[in-house]
Structures are given as structure tokens and as C-alpha cells.
Length: 111
Image (tube, rainbow, N blue to C red; front, side, top):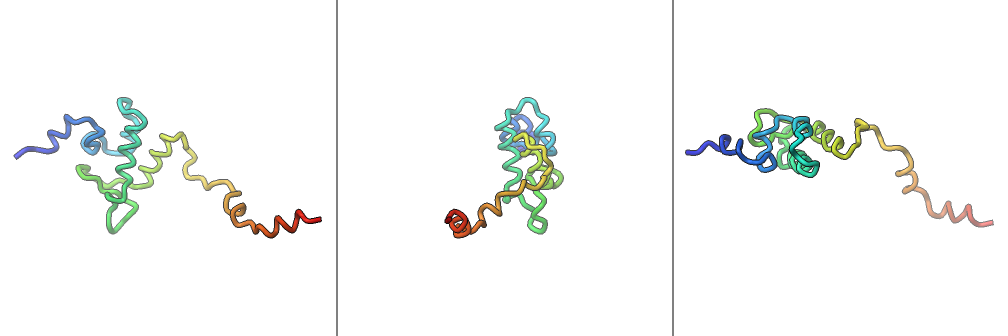
């Protein structure tokens, strides 16, 4: 019988990240990974396939001894994008612009 964890330690982190990292922050801090590689690992961890059935805000990654909060994974992905706003709400303008009535604009343009 072979020990899968022993073999996974020798694999590149991209193939078995749970054997190399214990948190989204540890993925971000690994200078040997490229940004796309970090994104692949974090995105796979955010996948619904790892969601804890009774608590969808948590992710249970195979090979990891603890659960990870989805918010931590998403925050790490935002850091990769350079967005460190800490979930500030978007600025206004989007919804009202979409809900504007086209006939109101037509009435304003008639003399």
C-alpha cells in the first residue's frame, strides 16, 4: 500500500496544493508560484464542489486538515487582482441607469 501524502509532497504545488498550503494567504505568499498558478489554486478551492453541505460558506479541501472560509479565498483572489477594497459596495450609477425609463428621456428631448 502506498502513502498518497508522501507522494504528493514531491509533486508540484499546482497538482496537489493542499499538501503544500494550509491557507489562501500561504498561497499568496509563495514566491515560486506565478499569479496564474495562484489563481488556479485559489479558484479550485473556491469551487462549489468543495462546499460543506451544511455550511456553504466553508470549503473542505481534500487533504487539508481544516475547513477554509470562502470569504478568505475570495479575498485572496481579489488581492491577486489588485483590489484591496475589502468588499466596499460598488459606487452608485449602475442600477438606476439600467432602470431608467426610455420614454422619460424621449419626453425631455421634445420641445
